[in-house]
Length: 246
Image (tube, rainbow, N blue to C red; front, side, top):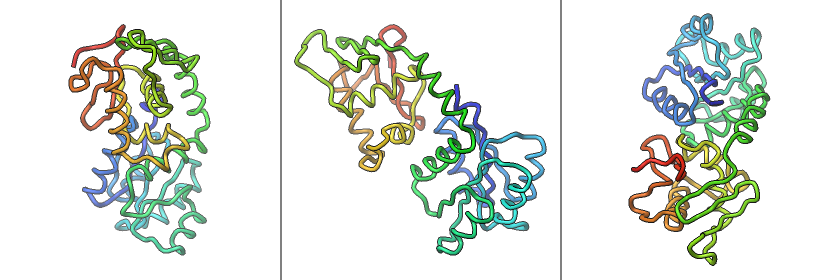
C-alpha cells in the first residue's frame, strides 16, 4: 500500500507530544520514527530515509529552526515546523528559512495531517500517481447485502426496494471505503478525501454519516457486517465476496 512507504521523522523532545504525533501518523498508515533532539535526528538520518520531517521549534541543544536550515541545505525533504511559538514573526522566519509549512501547538489533528499530506503532494508528486493506480485497481462493482453498488457509474441500487437511495455524502463515504476494502480508513483520511466537504465536517460528523449509511445497507446496524469499526484505526469495508463476520 502507498501509505506504508511513507516514513516520517518526528523531532520532538516532549515524550507525550511525540507519542501523540506518532499516533496520528500511524492512524494515517504512515511509519513514524522519532528523535528527541536535532543531534539525535541527524544521527538517525544517516541510516534512515524519510519522506518528511516534523520538527519542534524549541529543541534542547541545536534549535529546530537551525536544524531545519541545516537539513534544507543537504536535502529537499519536506519539512513541517511544529511549535508553540505562534507569532506572525516566528511563522515567517520558519517558512523563509527552511520549512515547507508551519503548525502551531495546540493543533487540531486534522490540521496537522492535512498539512503533512499537502507537503507530501508537493515534495513527492509520484505519491499522487501511485494513489490513482491503487484506485484503478479497486473493485468497481460491489454487493452489500441487498444493495448493488456500481462505482464506475456511481449508482447504488437496493434490489429489495428500488425506491431506497443513498445521499451524495453517503455514496462518497462508500466510495472512499471501497478504494481499500478490508483495510481501515481513518476519520482524518475520510475528511481529507471529502475534499470541498472537509470544511463542513468534523470527526463526529463522520461517525454520524457512517451510522446513517449502516442503517441503509446493514441487515442489523448494531452488528454491522459490511462497515465495521476498528478501534483507533477508523472504519473498514467488507463486501459480500470478501466480508467477515464482526
